[in-house]
Length: 633
Image 1 (cartoon, rainbow, N blue to C red):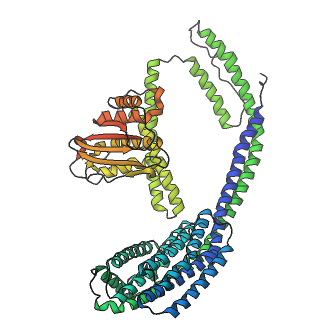
Image 2 (cartoon, rainbow, N blue to C red):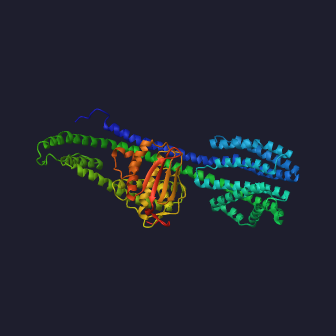
Image 3 (spheres, rainbow, N blue to C red):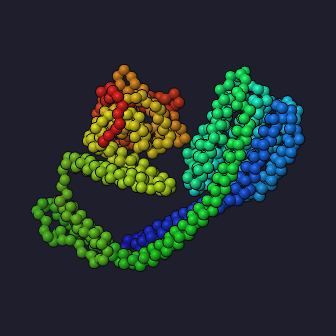
């Protein structure tokens, strides 16, 4: 048979091969550029540290000293010469910072915004000084004015530490928190100067000081817990030193004083305690920052080396793929042409004649009528296709299949496939869990977590087929499981789980026999809420006990549904729904209806005050346990 009109198979095979090869080249180039860009960004960190971080940190140090001297001048009336000298040092540091920052090019938008904000706050420094010289400003207001400038610099640091290396980012972020704790220590020292000058703690000062102490301790503790062994040591020793404990005692004494009470006898040592802690903190901060900067270059070089090696291997693989593809293309074209001719003869001559004969003659077929086709081939796939055509010929001859058996058979096929997928996915989850425990690389662990979440969702879809066939998924728990764990398990099976907020449920548990079905039911409702609401909105998950059991509400902020359609959906959920292939777009609601009917659970959809929908799930008391217990399979 001559070939029909259209492009020959040789051209199509060439296009078929070129598309993945070109895609592979494009992906390789994109990955190389992306990873290489990350490495270059890491190398740029040194420039940012020299021209932004270092000069701005020096500005902070000078401003902290100027704030201390300014407050002492306001409360004691002494130190004007010292203040003038300190202002000169501050102006020198600000000028150096602005000169260095102008040399930095191609800053990210977020960093540019924060740099502009910091310069704007620095421009207010002259006005702050005029108020201090005129004596028209309260000491606490002076502390707050200088603090706003420091806060602007820390927002710049936050934008600066967004580096592609996760390990370096975590340590840099922790060091920024340590810097903020150091800034709060400076503010506390300024408040202490005010308190000592007045001989008492006023209500406003005590309130401000209490907030500073709470924030400083929180930042210090959080940063200390996140630093690795190479950076934590000096800070840990500082936290355990007498210097730190003495300052903690001073903080507690100031916070505990009544607004008009006098100061304790130990107040005389507070400035010395603050000065000692300040020097130790400043020393640790400088050492830690230098240590982090030293880590950047090796990490960037290592990343670029990996890109180079991977890029070379990728190019070799692409070249080998092109050569092998062209080599086997001609052979495959020849074999496919022979297969085409044989299949055409089978379809248009032999089978057509046999079917025509069977319409009038039901006699058994002869060996000649079902003789297999033969094609010379060295490709196993083409050989399999030849065998498949022979099987098709045999199947077409014996094609009288009962329609009722077909429908039942299709149903069993779905169940069997779902069972197999469920088993394989369960094994895959176990393997992923083992891999997650075995790896310590953050990037690999993040990818494994994404794959684990995807597998969990695939398992839920497989179980949906089993549920629609009136079968049990097979998973179960022996003991009661806390409702909070069940809700979290349901959220974990949803694609956009990060949008779901689970509010604290009451301390009750579900019977182990119904845990799987309830979690599946909630997962379907939660997924509907995330799918039919704007991408950036939250989905709230609330629960409360009732006289008849437990009520769980899933509230989204979508566009809602017309009342007629809402009533129709509630009617379907109120009874055992029959699966309608014409409405497969609402497969999840069919699953919810089946599960609700199985356990006498009432599911109702109502309009939400936010404009979306609220799915109300009423669990009967027969499904609840008296006390929550640890879940166990």
